[in-house]
Length: 161
Image (cartoon, rainbow, N blue to C red; front, side, top):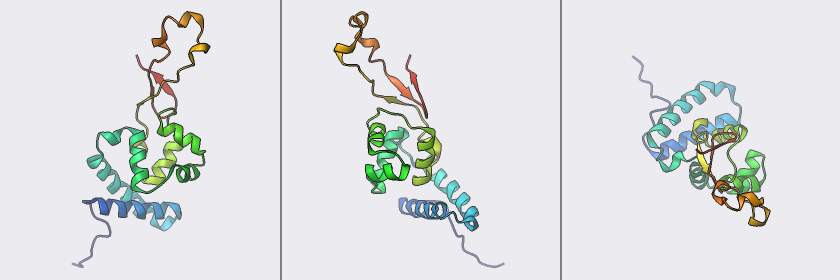
């Protein structure tokens, strides 16, 4: 029986995880059709690592993005360029003012080699309060309803009941 070493192994360290993420990114960015099997296997291995190692803090999509940006030394302006959006749009996402669109989720997933589901989770958005002077007279008595929290889930928002 021929002794052949495995090309890829189950990820056991963070260093190995980052190495595989970099490989996957290279294969995907270069549209290397000959590496399709490698891409699929790397996705499986990376997904398994993510499932076993993502902390509860990282289950918040915004916190996950912040962590990935730090780990990959990606600044807001660089991320905006890679996503094809403005720096202000990225800033609004990072400050919980906007949710992730399906297009942004797909691009982030490819960029950081994580599953789309990691970014497609509900999380609270900051309430958009109107200045007091712009409130209609009848709502002055009940300011609480204006600050009702919202939940973001992929694209769109849901009112929390």
